[in-house]
Amino acid sequence: MYLGDYIVIEKQTGQYTFDCCCVSTGTEFSAEVDSDKRGWFDDHTFSDQNPTACRFLRPLGKGRIGCTIHTDSPAQCKYYRCRIMDICSTEGNQAGYITGTLALHSSDSLLRDTYNGIVVNVSGPGEESEEYIKKELIKVGYKVR
Image 1 (cartoon, rainbow, N blue to C red):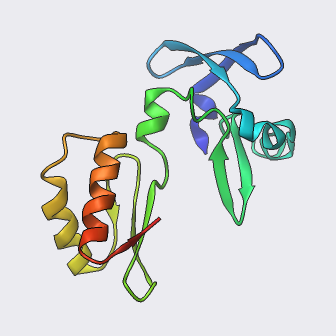
Image 2: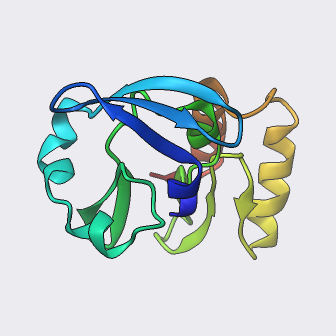
């Protein structure tokens, strides 16, 4: 939510294209609003009401807030996403969730032990690691979304 202090739009170059900068790293990047999220992006109510939020975040419904430049978002955003996976027991009860840094948030000791056994085989955050973790959790009976 507060990446608005770190992701700065330097210039709008088209209706949905922008030149941006990650203030914390000094990295410049170009971003285009994902074509499937332009309707959400066009509504500025959220960004007007949350001036410290990243200018590319928008409510997606059901209490979810999402990035409208997911395809072009900088590495720091991809790795520090709030929640990348929800994990449920076989009964469908929430057992925990995983954030973009691959941190597990759960008080379920069985899930924690299982997760710790899985992550020793991943090299770090990224889509390949996320898919591996998801596949392994499903193998042992968890529901992952």
